[in-house]
Length: 470
Image (cartoon, rainbow, N blue to C red; front, side, top):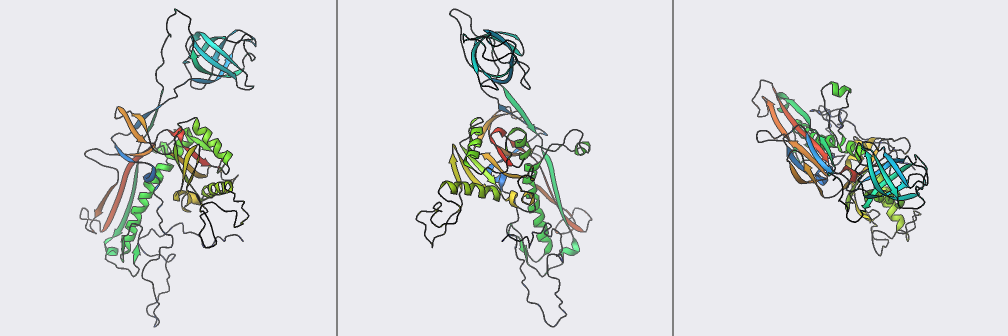
């Protein structure tokens, strides 16, 4: 029997400063001779409603003094081109190749270097030595094989350097190579919120004792609303860093003067690894991911932040490997505990596994919360773009900080906030009005203002994996 969809979650859980009829029983008629038996304390039916925790677990916060944050990441140490074509026919002893790789304006190949050249289609290959570099995007080789070139003219090939060879008594290598760096940048965005209550309502006491996740309690409803505004703002500080996108040229946001920012999802989609099949459910799926990580930074330890569906898929995959056949037979589920018996609780979940690298699994509330990404479509085939999880490398990396002008160790994922000796915009809050202790305007109200200016830096995005549909 399917799980019914009633009761549903509340999409607007009473952010107002007064008790709403949609959230509270309204038939309390105190003129009636039969008074109701009431619970004075508000019942926390949704548990902890805050979804912030991700960046606190994997990142750090540090100040920045500029409108732009720039850093340099190492390029590859070795050189490889994948769109090279030969002007010579099959069997030729020499050939001139043209490099057409995207973004390549000058080949880093020098006379005397030895190359591996492979046909992209058939896999046949040659070994050759570079004899000339006629132009910025061409090089000439002499083949080591007596049979000459093993593929036809104009065939697309992959070329990489594996060494060099020189004759006795010759000069050294001509030219040198500069280290290749990729320069990335991001800009902070300003995040604001505000809560307001008039002086008269502040003098009104309620009959329901309210509470919030940060422990604030009392019979004054505005206290609950103020604390919930603060909690909501703190959640937005994290979700803005995850979901932010830059304002594209010609967009309405750009026209309105907004800059946007590069959030974690945007960066990993752009220059990280994306698993587009929803969730990996088998070991061969994870082997594909491991093989991809081998070609990147090969970070030993990784944390996979998952929604409930991906969490169950990982558990089921690992359970199957341990002899669980899914039939419900008591003697088949041997994982989780040793010497299981009928009186013992069976642990059907896993906290992690090792397959080439260590993968630690952690539930991500943001992806499960129905008022956030947990309420999006997760049906395979129709849920294009829905995100099920994110693999984050653990530890830190060394980058050249363009602002500091030196190498610095940074967590792969961290937040930079605007701050100087005169102004700290990490988390600002101030009160205006003439109520609640404020006395800086003639407004008969208390206004609590919140502000932060920050950006997230995703270093080494090539080591991240985003699990999504499509």
